[in-house]
Structures are given as C-alpha cells and as structure tokens.
Image (cartoon, rainbow, N blue to C red; front, top):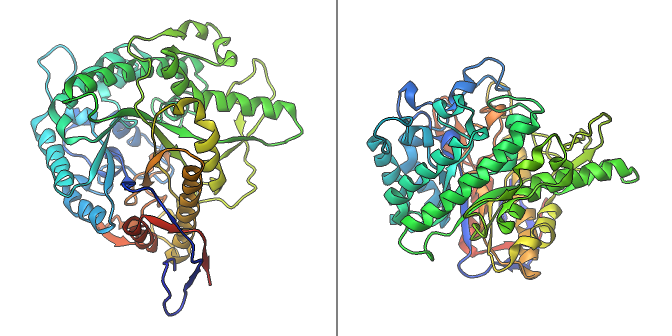
Length: 479
C-alpha cells in the first residue's frame, strides 16, 4: 500500500519534512490519441500507419492492437472527471492527424466535421473544469497515404504537417494552453529507421533516420509559425516539442570506446533537436555528418531559430552504452543489456538522479529564459500475456516510490534555480504501449480492457494528495 496516512495492515512512515512546490505549479497527466482513443471513425480512410502496422503479424509483442484501447473517444467525459478527482490542473493529449485530415492533396481539403466536434467537446470539457490543455500535433502516427509516399523522409511531410497545424490552430487555437508540435522526434527516427520496431520498420537506415529529423525540424518550424499566426497573441499558447532525455553511461568506465559511444549517443539522442533550434538550422555531430553525404542535411532552416518557447522534458530512465566492433563505426553503438539498478517491467532502470542531472546539467545550454515542464515521466508495472495483473498492490507500491523519488528530484532542481513550472505524469490510465502492445501498465488508473472498467491505484491516491497540497514528503518509507 502506498499512501501518506496510517491505516490498518500496511502503513507508511513519513518524515515530517514536506517539500513545497511554487505557487501555480502545474500538476497533470499525459496521454496520446492512438494509445487511448480507439478508432474515432470506423473507416479505413482514417487509419494511420500504426493502425496498419498492428495488423501485420509479429509486429506487436503481445499481439494486441489499439482498435479499442481505452475507448477514450467514447469515455472521455469519464476520464476527465478522473483528472478532476485527482486534483490535477493540467492534461496532455494529442490530435489524430489521419482522422482529422483524411484526404490527400488534389481535392478540397478541410478538417473532418465529426472529428472536430469530438475534439471540441473534449477541449470545452477541459476548459469548463479549468484544466490546462497541452496539445500535441504529432505523436508518432502518420496518415496512411503520406506514409506510403515515404512519410517524414520526404519534404512533402513538412508541407503537410504545416498545413495540418494551420488548420488546427485556426479551429482550436482559443482552447489550447500549451502546444507541442512533435513528440520525441529522435526516438521516432531511431525506432522507425534504426531499430526497425516501428513503421516503416527499416533497420540501420541512417539516411532515413536523419532525413526524418531534417524534415521534422522543417515541419516543426513551419508549424510553430502557423500556430503563432493563428492564435490570438504571441503571448498566448507557448509552443515547443518534447525531447526524450536520457543520461547515457559507459558500460565499462575504464573502456574509452564505451565512453566514445556514450558521447555519440548523448549527442544524437539528447541534443540534435534543441541544438538545431537554437542554431537556426540542422546541426549534426561529426560522427553523423561524416556518414556518406549526410553532412548535406546541415544548414539553415527558415523560421527554426528560437522556435521553442519552453523546454518540454520527457524522462524515464538512464541508458548504459557499449561499443560494438565493426566498420564503419556505428554512431548509435548499442544499448547494454546490463542493469545495475532496480528496473521496471520494460527493463528500464529506476534512476531519479538522472532526472536531476537532466534538469540541472543536460538542458542547461537551452534554458536561457525558458521555463521547463516535465511532459512525461512514469513507471511500467509488470504484466502478463493475458493482460491480467498479479499482485498490483506490490507493483503499484513501486510506482508510488518512483513517483515520490522523481518529484523529490524535481524539487531539488527547483531549489538549484531551474524554473520547473509543471509535471505531467505518464500516464493517466493504462494504454497501448506501441511495440509492446496493451500489456505494460503505466496508468495511475487501472483499465480492465475486456470491460473498460477504471480502478484507482494507490499511486493515483498519492498523486491526488500531492496535487492538492502542492507538496511532497521528502521520504516515504513503507513498513
């Protein structure tokens, strides 16, 4: 059990010291459309590359798909009531690009009225409850027709994304408080073109990966401009992208080659996107620019300079890197399979100190006068192929500990002078976790998929108290 009061049976002993967060701190939860909604319109024309990917055998670890997911499309009122019940003042979601804009170029194009109505009802519900909305425009899903033309590897992707962003800003601008153009661009490029675990399933296609990053930078810059043009004021609706930050550690501290790979991976995953934005053009590490003729991708991108109003930080874990012999040198090296700390169900090490490092060291070149918001952070509990859980009180106690320790790390960073304005926990409910399927459980709220019943976990109760008190106890010790 993980609560901060004493009860019969299991109980908690807490230190008396409470760590208070700044007034007006944003406490929220995060999700994305594909992971929770279910199909909003039963039509093949509205399916994304991910919808098609899940229909290809062997692509999803547990064989599941997201056709139903959490049925958020039908149950969003219930889930927003949960947000309110948890005392949260912020909620992050994303828009379904393939459903909102299903038609390809060559005909009169506008946002689908039925899907617009759904999203307006969602955003009005959040507005009525005084819950701040974080809206992501691209969270990994492409329209099928665009994916078939090469997706983000082709310049047309940036054109289409800018057009989509303009239509969304014109239609929904007054209802959005914070904008996210692209979620985790480097993670997307890696999973889609290096590891091959996401569509289009390319392996070690460095050309595809960095063409994708280049076109995403162009698309981000143009979407940023469109949002600024079509919202009421340049002071309204700050715009950014989310970066998946991971501290990288050499597997063998005495091996200079492992340190070299650690440096390469850090430079690629953590820094290419924000460094390029602050430079006004694509900037590649030397190890990348010297692969083939990838150096040609570097250079100025109109509208990119400074197109990041706040730093949106996604953080889950650190990563251990090791050198892989071969020629040419693989700039991505390899993730070590070794773990030195306790891990979650996905094998990710629990390392709250890494979040403190990210906030106080890694993002420092990009802080300037920007605020920081943690846009994702959470714990995956154990799962089984039949989507049932074992003793979830034990597993959720680990989620409580994860939550508490990472909030303490954030508070330490604030005391060190970092302007952290908010924390959005991943995730509100269990959801479809991409290549892993429905099995991993990230939710503060449990979803029984066959019945869609929602059940508060103890971590939800803990988080509700944190949000209500705007504070966290420095130590929570289970007895």
